Length: 158
Image: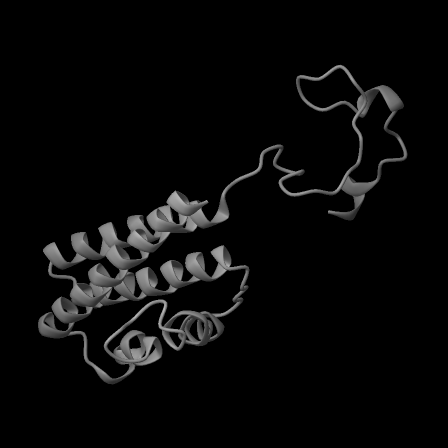
């Protein structure tokens, strides 16, 4: 890729953004490269909804391991969305799970029957059976519905 990065042969009139007449101005900012600013939290919540759909579809197709995987993804992406909404970054599944427990469960802001970690990490001690897939999917559904309510309430108070 290094030869493609060589800009010594580019003339000044070639530094123009697509559809623009003015010269390109090199600037750093949110969304600068994409040309748009996106709501990352909303995008993550949309992805969470999509993963929940995949989990349901997998369950209907009796693909228990896939159901469990997609349900797990609902927990992770949903928790990441709410953490980012609070300005808390998580770069790994472990940091997202621990961060959600720290910033939501322990504070009482997001009550759960157990620690978030214990709920999410049930997959480590269960076989991918129909019974476990059904129970885990049910918990993922309850979590998804709860994070949707939290986000809806946050947008009302903003």
